[in-house]
Image 1 (spheres, one colour):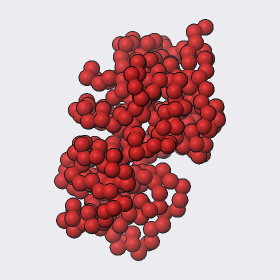
Image 2: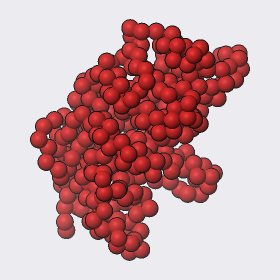
Image 3: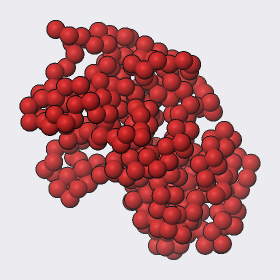
Length: 347
C-alpha cells in the first residue's frame, strides 16, 4: 500500500505530520498530487477553534492546486499531467439552490478542509468535474490563488458592478484584494480601505484608484470625494465586524448595493427607515458559483499582479508555523502558501 504525508490539525493550535494510505481514484475521480495550498481565514478560524462547522482531527486547506497523476474509470486520460485548480465544494446537485446554479448555497454543502479533509497533504482524490485545468502560463502557486480569486469574482458578480461605477471595499486582506482585481476586471473604479499601511501599499500596487487608512483618515469624506458626492455605488464589507458593516452602509449610495462578505457572527443592525431611505440592496456573498473560469482569466491576464499577493511559502511539515505567523502578524502576511513538493528557499 502506497502512503503519503499529511499535516493533520489534531486539535486547535496543534498540527502533526502523519503518514497515511495514499488514496486511489474511484470512478469519476482523479488523483491530484498537491503542489500548492493557500492559507485562508477559514483555516485560521479552525486553527483557533472558532469555526463552528469544523470537526477535529482535520486536514485543512481548500485553496488547492496540483497535478493530475492518475485517473479513475470514466475520466478522460487527457487530464493526466495537467496542472489543475480544485473546486473545494461538495454539493448535492438536487436542492433548489443547486437546481438554479447557485450551488454555493447548497442545503447540504460540504467544503474540503472544513467538513471533510482538505489539501494539506501530498495527494487528494477529487471528482474530475471539480478540476479546472490551468493555462500553460500559470504555475502551481498562481493555481492555488484561483479559489480566493473566485470569492472576489462572486462578490463583484453579486454586486452587479459595471464599467464606470464606483466600488468601495473595506478590508485589503487577500479577499478584499481579490474583490479589487475582480472589480477592475469589469471596469469599475475602486477605493479600498484598511487599517494596515502594508496592505494598502499592495492595493495601490494593484491599481486601486484611492487607498484609505481609516484609522487616520475619514472614510466617509474620501468616498464622498471619490464618488463626486453620490456615495459608492457598491460597498463591500470584506472584514466582517459590526463597525465595518456600519461603515459600508454609511458610504454606499442611495439605490446602491451593499455586499456582505466578511464572516462575522452578529446581528444586522441597520434600521428599517435607513434601508428604505436609501432603497438599498443588501446582498450576501458566499464562496462561488461558476466563478473559477473568471478567476483563471484574471490570473492569466494579471499573473504578475496575482503573484504579488503571495507573501510567504512553507513546507508541509511547517504548517503549524505558517498558521501561527498568519495569526500573530497580519501586517506581514498576505497569502501564505504551503508547498508539499516544491523547494522553498525562504519563508
